[in-house]
Length: 348
Image (cartoon, rainbow, N blue to C red; front, top):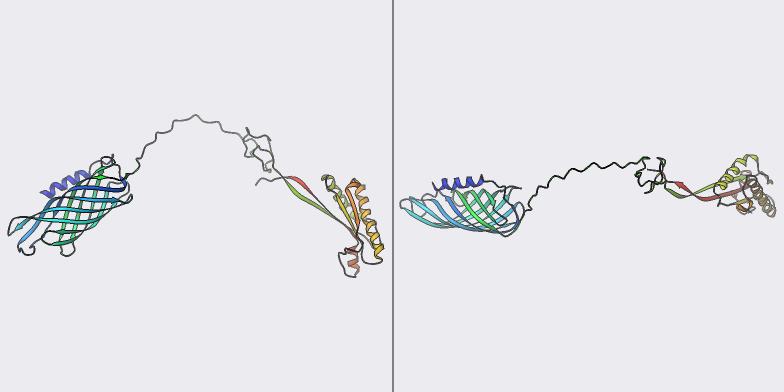
């Protein structure tokens, strides 16, 4: 009858609403509880025919909540067993134990597993497993109800226990979930326009209609960078000659066009001769060849003060072999013109 009454109380508490519960996260708690223990210990030692029946009592516990899921506790219970059989009366007992509790996420329910020692007519050891429920009235006070099965380790007893307790929590509570009000509707905002699709809105674009191929700056204008550009010239001459052949006119005109485009650029024309003949003669011949190319550039519209000439004679042979092919390679005028120009950066 006692067990039935406690079971009904536990069931009612488990069915209670947990809407106002504030599940805890970490800290120490202290509690006291009423205890019911249903035993079935028959023919106890030194009293054949005497059975130990149910116990009602009270107890106290201290626990620690480690995190959202785990806590542990130490428990003491003062027990008062009923006796039946050869004699009537009661038997005092003490229960000591330790439990590990697993708290299910966002739920007041928990599972437990532990180890207990009960000192009554003898010292008995039990392993226990069970389930429980907690309900918080505020950030500190909560009640709990639980039931467990006890399995004897040194004797084959299988018992059932139930507890109903009240506790005080010293730790921190979980943050309360607040329902934020829905934002008030706002008037639609005008869509910013980018007419030339360069990534800069028209309100900030100071260079409208930039080409799609151009990278632009924060003002929508085409980006530029300085790059080195150059052009090379090579004019060859027959043996003992300083007249520019017509086949090189286009190459010289290309150099003239480059110089016109890059007005700050200048050119140095380097004349060379082969090693055939007198070195002093070849020196003069190389200078004449450089002058001949200079005249052609001037005829193409390049100012004389932008052109310099120098003759190296046979000092800088391109090919030192003593062959017709080598001599032909060495009879030349060379120039390399370099300048920098501002070019557009291409959009990636």
